[in-house]
Structures are given as structure tokens and as C-alpha cells.
Amino acid sequence: MSLPSRLAIAIAACCCTSVAFAADLRTVVDQAIQPLLKKYDVPGIAVAITVDGKPSYFSYGVASRQDGTPVSENTLFELGSVSKTFTATMAAYALVQGKLSLDDHPGRYMPQLKGSALDQATVLNFGTYTAGGLPLQFPEAVSNDEQHMLSYFRNFKPKATPGQMRQYSNPSLGMFGHLAGLALKEAPADVIEKQILPRLGMQHTYIRMPQSALPDYAWGYNDGNKPTRMRDDLFSVEAYGVRSSSADMIRYVQAQIDPGQLDATLRRAIEGTHVGYFRIRGMVQGLGWEQYAYPVALEQLQDGNSNTMSRQLNPATRLTPPVQAPAATWFNKTGATNGFSSYVAFVPEKKIGIVILANRNYPIPARIQAAYRILSQLADQSTRK
Image 1 (cartoon, rainbow, N blue to C red):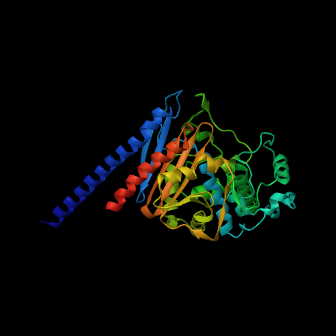
Image 2 (cartoon, rainbow, N blue to C red; image 1 turned 90 degrees about the horizontal axis):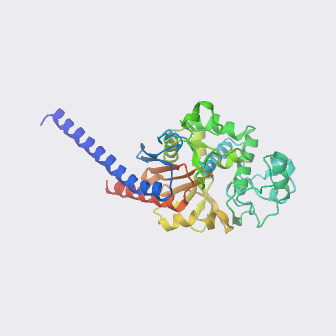
Image 3 (cartoon, one colour; image 1 turned 180 degrees about the vertical axis):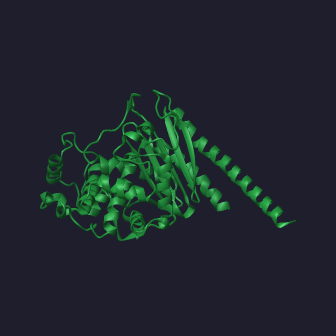
């Protein structure tokens, strides 16, 4: 057989394999995602998956029930707390440049907090929710005003010594991002939008929505099936304010899996968000991302993302020294606003990752189960190769 003939056969075999894989992947994703649309009355879901650096997109339902706009990989969803991973990247970006230290105390950047109880906590404590028991949300009495914010932090009475307990908290992570911005002498939104996102190739991700992007912005739907979008609030930029598409988010995941293609500063910042600082139950808390030794059981992921973890104080064990996560790690982060929900997970060793974005805040366990089902089958296929 001639070389051209053998080459043609090889190419045909490769194409058939690719087509078969795409069909199998579609079936796997459909089986995991379609039941969610019906069970939880979710208007639309966008899924993006990366396998060996190659993205695939799967879109379901509508971005708006009013006009029937279909979901696509370019539809913009509110990421909710997945935004915290961007804030963590910004803080790590400041660390790499030597402008911020995790051992600093807030009083270094905010003299108004010197001498307060919270000034005993470090930048690391705020970034890992171990500052002393800050609550999930600011009290309603704390308005979107810097003086109210300062007064709240200055008068806060910690429930625990810094580093002893973890309490998942928007004010805690918000302060982490705020301190990073002060260290960089720039607004966090400017750093993320003008320096970090472009260098990640994320051209369709926003904190401040431009008029030109509004046609792609989905409507979220609350418990009463009313269309809704989030409002700007105290520390919303740092804690839950990013909007993005599944296409952009899978680029973000690919950068997490293989940051080697990034410039040195951003690569080191991404790697800095993969360091583990505290162990809480079966999960390791890093900056933004939460980590699990891989392979991991579904039950362990569900526990790590449960209400017990997000709404209660949990004992935290400091990892000394901090641990750079191995490639065999399941990284994840959940997010939600009143009308949207998200889940992002990836395993660098397997070169697989997933993004699930929806315009309804449906239960976290269902998101995790769907993602786990999909990634587990992808990992099995990777093992058989």
C-alpha cells in the first residue's frame, strides 16, 4: 500500500474516532443536563467542556423567556461566587509583583482598622474565610457606603481566633479583594477587566456591562419566575460580580489546567491560586478555588459544597507549609445570584474540565452531580486510551 493510501486511511480512522467521541460526549451531557431543565424549571443552561485542550459546547433552552432567545456559548450569565476565583487571581497577581503579602494585616492598607479586633487577622485569613467568623452576607443595615463598611469592620467582634475556624463569607472575600486593590493602587474592577481578562483571552467577560454586550446578557429567573438581574452592592465586584459566557469560561478553565502558555506574571498568579492553606473536613481551601485529592467520591464533593460548609463555622487546620496542589486534584467552585447559578470544576492530571451556567439558582447538589457524572465518564475514557 502506498504512503498516500495509508495516510488517507489513518486520517479517515482519526475522523471517525473524533465523530464517535463527539456523539458519545453529546449523549453523556444530554443525559446529565436535560433532566435538570425539567426538574428545576431552568429556562436555559450552557455547558462547556475541555478535553486535552479542546473545547466542546452544549446549549439548552432560552436566555430569555420573554423573547425566546436561545442559549449559546456566547450567552452571558452571572457567575455569582465563581467570581471569587477572579478576585483571588487579582490578589495573587499583586503577590507575584511584591505589592501584597498574605502576612499583612488590613491596617497596613486601611489605617482606620488599626487596633481593631479584625486587624489581628491577615490578608490570608480574609482570602480563606478564616478571619474570625465574618458572616455570609453583610447585615442589611450596612449600606453600599465606604464609611458604613469601615464602621462594620472596625466594630466587628470575632467569633474565633484568626486561622482557627472557617466561615464562608462575602464580606471576608470582599475585604481580601479590596486590600489587593489598595495594594495595587487600582480599583479591583480595573485590574480584572483591563489587565487580567485580556491576558487570559477572555474578551466577553465583564464586571461593568457595556451597552454593546447587553444583547447577549441572559435574564435570570427568581423563585417567583420573575426575570431578574443582580444589582451592584457593597463588595459585589469582588465577591460575585462577574458575568461571562461558557466559551470564555472554558478558556479560563484551560488556563487553570495548563497555565504554561501565559506570560510569566499571570502564570505565577494562576499557580498561586492552586496553593492549599487550610484543611476543612474533606476539602482544602486555597485562594478562590477549593481542592479535593483526586479521585474523589461524589459524597465528598457534596459535603464540601453543603450548607454545613457554606453557612456554619467549621474547624480549620493550617497547612504548614502551604501545599501546591498536585495535578491529581479536583478543583471546584460554585456560584449563584438570585436568578443565576454556576459550577466550575477541573482536574489538571486528566486535562478535563467543565463549566455549567444557568439562568436559575437551582440546587448545588444537582449541579455537582451532573458535572461529576460527565467528568467521571471523560476520565474513564482518558484512562482507557
